[in-house]
Length: 217
Image 1 (cartoon, rainbow, N blue to C red):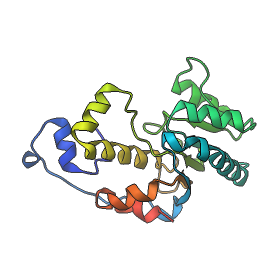
Image 2: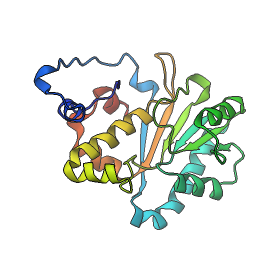
Image 3: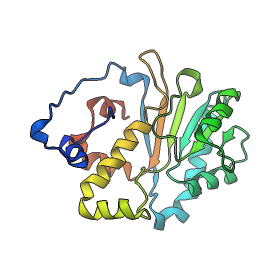
């Protein structure tokens, strides 16, 4: 089940069912978008070729955001483990919490919950993670969350249907941006650093929920 479908036609194709046999119901969110603003920073391109030039700027941007939220817990969505490790290596901040060895996400979250003002650094907490209330007052999305083309299945599906590949990225992006505001009373701030954000949002705006678009500053 998913509350973030975006493109009903692609969703039906993924499930192998006819859209003519499906009833589509759209319901607006009851959350106040002003309680969960999304700040677009356009720090730089995060594709593989651009990473060497962009990462120093990313590190500085992350440092600035951490300083702004000194006394609050948060999460940094990194896109992959290499970026997560680079951030932790470059920023000597004891608040940063990254997976150790064969540690599970569940154990990682328990460490975060017990911390005073910990900040999770992970590429794998985009979905199914409940960081309600003081568990996270801010989140940083470092990279647009495209699935890895090193996965043969993903690469083949992307070749067959590029829109499916983009839709999955946007779905993950929206889900990631909702990890820190979990109720009508909750609130948080989201920062998106990848400068590719504006391009993909403008190109596929018709797919995106109005609630998400209203959050963008």
